[in-house]
Image 1 (tube, rainbow, N blue to C red):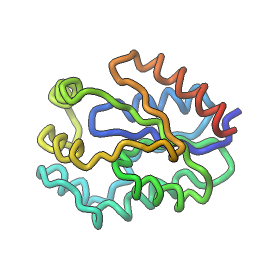
Image 2: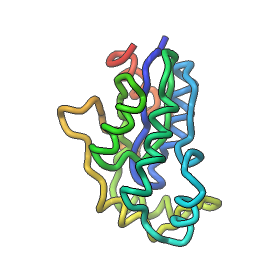
Image 3: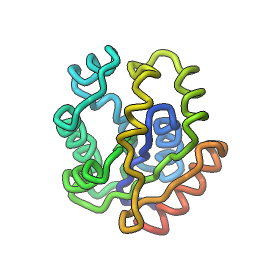
Image 4: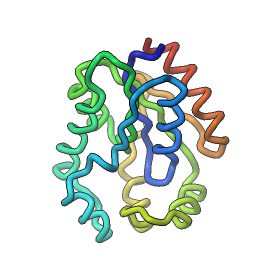
Length: 167
């Protein structure tokens, strides 16, 4: 049984919510959708096509970390684009947090975000997210997964990795 904490991370339209929900189901963990934790001002800013600043992000990242607190298994979705953001989430969680990094080509991401409907994040902000992204390094508790693969395969491989890394 998974008793740890993990964040499914990556830029917009990489599949964080879908993979996170599948992971939570496979692992019997609670799932927190990071977009729902954004303050109203952040949603309004992004809806207007304005990229968030670090000052905008810190309270939101703190909320993501708080959603991972406890002793039960917890999964959250969050872009977690910079190492400093991932460190902040882990600090607020108060326990080790593994990062499932959903990685893909800019072409695939552009196609996905252009096809997405009903989300406050406009396609115009993808470039700013890609520019901000700091891929997890070798000293982080993180692993990259190729989003060109079927989500069921990603969730299966990620759940096996999480059970091995954090129990």
